[in-house]
Amino acid sequence: MSTQAVGDLRQRSYSRKILANKIFRTIICILLCLLSILPFYLMIINATRESKAIEAGIAFLPSGNFINNWNALMAKSDGIGITVWGSMLNSAMITIPATILTIYFSTMTAYGVFAYNFKGKKFAWAFIMAIMMVPGQVTIVGFLQFMQNIGLYDNYIPLIIPAIAAPSTVFFMRQYMTGAFSLEIIEAARIDGANEFRTFNTIALPLMRPALATQAIFAFIASWNNLFTPSMLISSTNKSTLPMFVQILRTEQFTTDYGAIYLGLFITVVPIIVVYLILSKYIVAGVALGGVKE
Image (cartoon, rainbow, N blue to C red; front, side):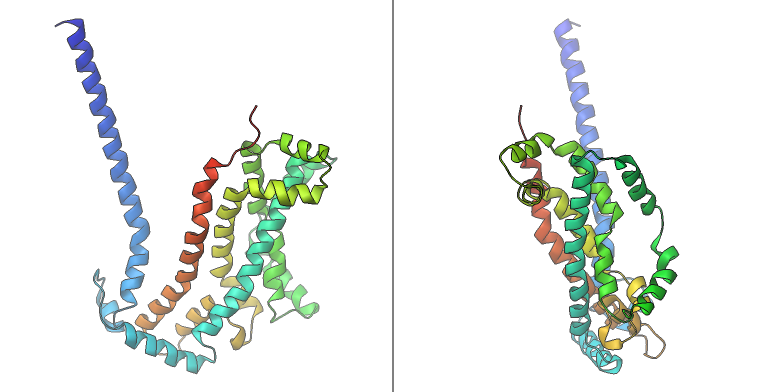
């Protein structure tokens, strides 16, 4: 066999291996995608089924009980004392400002640790990392007592203002700055006479748009789905958030109607999907954002 033939054979073998690897990766990605989508799909399907049918087993085709489930959900709202729209508004009143505070001040903190050299910088960063290791359940009792002492129990403020301190978001933003942010831009702005706040707001934040969008999605989901802290701090029914509203539907004082419960869960997920669709374009477009080219 000639050298040319041997080379062609090796090239074809190599091409087949590459093709087999691509097919394998594609199959794995499809399976992971299906596993991610399946729970949401089943939730939507169950929102259209009767409670007895849901108890009987899983179905993959929608039923025609959506209107009845909706009417049942509205009827249960009258018994609870707050409508699903009222609880959604309450969740929005908490989630939107909490997300904004989390993103802005966490990015500012990460920017300060990344862009400035000061005494105690390493200690400050180590302290932020240490806070990440403390679960919120450990501090909730002291936090609850503190809110009662200062008269903020049964108030939305304790659910919004503490969002300023988000160590995990600070960590992510600093790591993003380390790999995708150039200090030469900051130095150029200072030479041009821009003050520090203007530099941060007009230069740093736009360059951080992909990371901001990513963390905004995570912060929104965490605040929107938060059931533990609001359940501890909110006692008035008319101030219940959407997760609290769905939780009330499952209490023993109401007949368990799984169709209405799944419909409530579906309504809970819709704003999260909308926020993701709005912000995901910034994540995709962020790869085109550049810094200083040397």
